[in-house]
Structure formats: structure tokens, C-alpha cells
Length: 400
Image 1 (cartoon, rainbow, N blue to C red):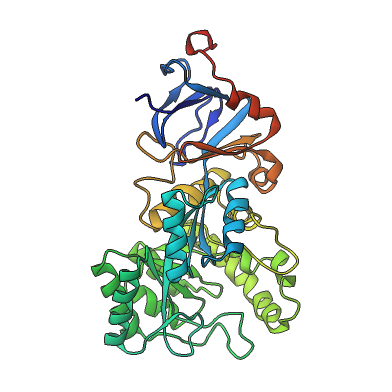
Image 2 (cartoon, one colour; image 1 turned 180 degrees about the vertical axis):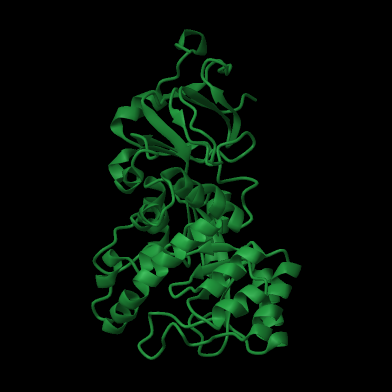
């Protein structure tokens, strides 16, 4: 049986690895995988391949959102469909829990179609913690809770080491889990080969999470030098979620004035910390508290906005794209199949109008996302490119 074969031709390729862009490229796709990548003049295009002409456009990996709140409702399915149309091909939900696991499995089985890929985190936190699902107190109860989350199918464990902005009667400085509990949680999660993502804004939670050997520090809105040095020494990933404290987000919850006050205080500290993290060579990945809320965000806005924020903090556009593709995949231990455009990887890619290496904000305008492929299937395309997808070109007659 002949494989379903496509070729994306003549675009400028950003492969997500951080290497130089490749002009006049060819990406050969066989079924759901990338078969080969290279110069269009050097790649042999299979006969009867469906040809997508990307001349004058940019071809890059689908964006990966590393801190979302998707839990498996019908509304969440709508969010995943709209996200895919914006070029976000994979979403890690930090509050998926059992319902998220079921939705993930339905997407992977093809029962729910047209959605971003889902990577599911299940929550284990203390009594009266910042986030809630499986409550566990004390090291041995924490270990049991992690085992339960592994059993229901978690891809990773989400926990909290500090408070947050949301609650009226909490603050970011409130400690959640102790070091002993975090150490037990991390050790147990790693025993089941699950990474650990920690919601944490301030000390002592930052040092507790770092010392415990967790894998990802999320938020860090009040991050300090000591925490940055610890993250660097332990080679952890920092997912700063700058969009949480950005000026645009300050008015997202007008019914929660206490949120605005603390976020406004955190904003300059947050950005200074990310600038310093970049200068120190700390591994940065992308997450946003997706999809957003209030009056200021549309579905799909926050992830490309985060790339802009990273550039404003000193990253080059190329570094920001790597953060939002390769690095986020590596943070969640899924880099073996997504995150870059390399042979053997899932064929998750987007065709973009213009060059985001010149202007990262191009990715924020959904009109510039001309085509989205996930698992080698064209999931979204503009009218101009529909004709290239529908017409099969003979490879012998194609101007290579």
C-alpha cells in the first residue's frame, strides 16, 4: 500500500534546532512523519506526491504551548481546534487530570479530530494549596498520590511550591509544599519516568523546588539571583509565563483588583529575571497560563505573544522560536517526536507569511498562519494555499 506523501517546497525553513534558516527547502512527509529535509534542488520528490508550494514563505515547526489549563470539556475541544488553526500544534495542560487524559487519548485515537496534540499534567498539591485536584500531605501520602496520577495516565506531575495571584486571600509569597514533600514528590515522579512542573513565584518555594530536583520552574514572577543560580546549576528548565504579568494582562480580571496590584508589582522583577536568565544561558521554554481570560485575550493569542515578550527580554527571534518549539518539547520529554523539523519526527509544521526571524510579531497575527499540518494532515489553510494542497503535481514536471 502506497504511503500518503506530501512535499512542502521552496519555503525558507526554520527547523527549530537553532541552526541557520534554509532557503528554497523541501520537506518530504510520509504519512504522519517527516521523511527527509533539505535543499529543494537536492531532494528527490516522490512521484504523485501532493505538493504544497511555500515559495516566498517560511516553514517552521508548530508552536508548543507549555502551560495551559485544558481539562477535557467540550469547550476545551473548541479551544484545541482554534489553537491548531493558529499554529499551536501541541499543548501541555498543567491541569488536565483524568478528564484531560481521556481527551488526549481520544485525540490520539482519532475520535476527536482537528485538535492540537495534548500532553497531560495531573495535579498533586497540599491541603489549601494554590491549585487543586489530588490533595496529599506529608511525604508518604504525596508518594501515593503521584502513583495514583501515574496510574490514570499522567504525562507529567504538576504541583505548587508557592501561592499565586488568583486568590483574594493568598499571595505569591505563601509557601505551599515543604522541601521534604517536594523531594518525595519528585523522587516518586521520576521513579515512574514522569517530569515535574512546579508553580512557584517566590522564596522559599523557589529554592525548595530547585533543591528537590524538579524539572521545570513555572512562573517565577518574583525570581531572585539565588534561584536563577540554582536553576542554572541544576540545569532545569525555566518557563516564565511572562504574559501573566504583562501590561496587556493587567486588565484581564477586572473583578479581581488584588490580582492587578500584585502582578503590577511583579512585572519589572519578572522581566529582569528573564533577561538575566537568558544572559546566564538558562534553558527557557514557553508557557502562558493559556488560553487566557477576561476581555484581553483571544484563543491562540498568548503563545505567540510570549515569543514577543521573550524577544523584548533580549532573546533573538530565532532563540524565541527555539524556546517555543524545541525547548518546550525537551522540557516535557517529547522531543523525540515533536519540536523540530527533522527526519523521523511527527510532521507538525506551519507555513507563515513573511519571516518571523525578521519580525517575531508576525506569528501573533493569525492571518499570517497560512497553513497548519499536524501528523502530516493539513488541518488549516487559507484560500490561496488550498489549491496547492488539492492539486497533485507530477514531481517530474515540478521546477526543482
